[in-house]
Image (cartoon, rainbow, N blue to C red; front, side, top):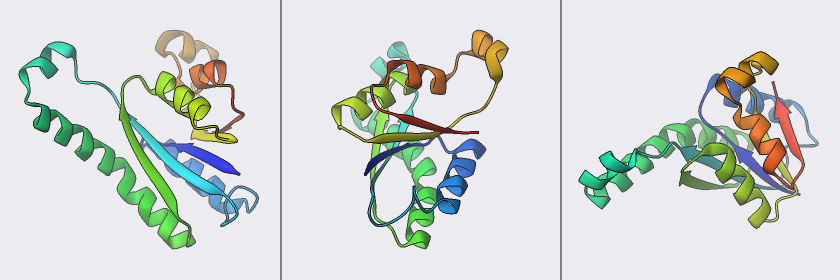
Length: 140
């Protein structure tokens, strides 16, 4: 199975990884994993005054903060994973990559705000489920 693991480095990502580790059906060498993190975009006005290499370094550094513990997790499990870093709006980017990459499953942690919280703050998880043509496993 080709699995897209969406991660933001939050405690909810750690909870999702713990869930994967505890369930053999989701974690094992018979799956192909791609870990995706989406860094929020730098506002256009700020980006326009930054050198392209400075902006690229910023996105790389922010992505690596998320990837470092996840690389260790996969190494501890003895599994290989590809890592992809994008910048933009998280829900749109995750759903687009899942569909274009022809993944079998998207796995992500959910903050679990509930209906009222989603109305006020929105929810990446809710938007991914709504936009994605691929099955989504939400871990709360």
